[in-house]
Length: 492
Image 1 (tube, rainbow, N blue to C red):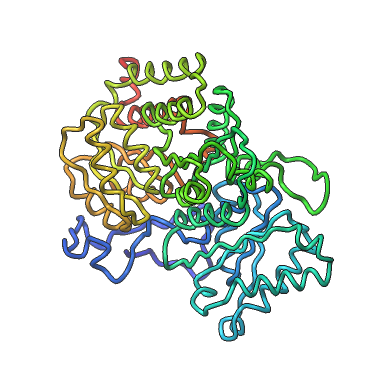
Image 2 (spheres, rainbow, N blue to C red):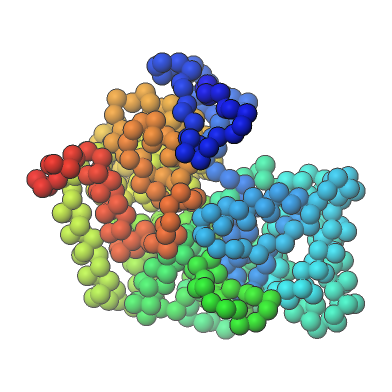
């Protein structure tokens, strides 16, 4: 790309936009052997972010908990910046603040002093220690370090107060996975550390929602409430990351909501654990099943008709409680919306990108609309993603050409494939797909994490029947806004 010359005196505000001049007048197809990300030594436009982010997301969903990052300041600053852009909320995240000395001699001193400072200043109800690539590579013995930190706390504030603050260690080397894997590891670390005893059945169900937004979690609670079922939502960010603006009742300020620590301890006594996103939360559900016999119900994401049906049916079979009339009416409204709009969505060719669970859930939903998925890109490499796509296509009776499936690749691979297709009508994905949609000159429907270039998307729901109506309306309106001139909209 070439840029116009920037004057030494600076650019006035009315000329801030710099026009990009293409290096070549036409699109140049790249060598086919370099398109798969696995054939290249570089990743171009990654379709994921780092593993510690997923673990920090999880810790923030526990009431009064603060993540403590055993790594450099950048590992914390980037995540706080991302959360602020996506959720429009501040996030309290502590850091060991690695510098050169920690990289050479280890992070023991940083962790012990950091834990001490965090406790005496904020008095958190739980500390989630999240490792990073640097601490994992230098081989920090985190278990021993935490024992030393605990012993140090006992000397300073007394054993009773020191032992009253649980510390959960989540190992998240960034090079070993993505934010989805980080959340998944956190789900296991929390139940393994806290849910240690099965002594009194509670007739509740555990919900591990995965990387869903606050609006989605509220919709899940809405479904549970109307089913008359009490649930424990692990990593409930619906309030901590969407808190009302009010004067703090006490200092240090702790946002309202989040899963209480005692509720996590009680998860071993529940009837079952629903991991709504198999790639983000299955590890915790499987652990509870193996250790305590708490049944694990893994996926599918409750997106669209079939996904929500499966969730409610599993709840009904598990608890014996019928599906109430008001939820049946919500389902009927979504079916009615599908019938009202199928002539706009039928045969439309759609490309979907994002976290694998989101891609799979949305794929099932677009098939219900009669759309044709032409390319599916899951940003986190998965052993089951290809098979899951085949199963969903077969389940939906899809008879078109099989879509390209990018399993863990980057967005360069995804974009180049889309440019070589004769037609794509719509892209569904997160904000990282903005440039792809602009290049293809098609609308982008924003779903999944992260969405940082629109306001309010973290508050809406796309799960459940009501969320399906919201997502359907946005898809249809995007098609109408792009394909229909204003002087023809009266014919719709």
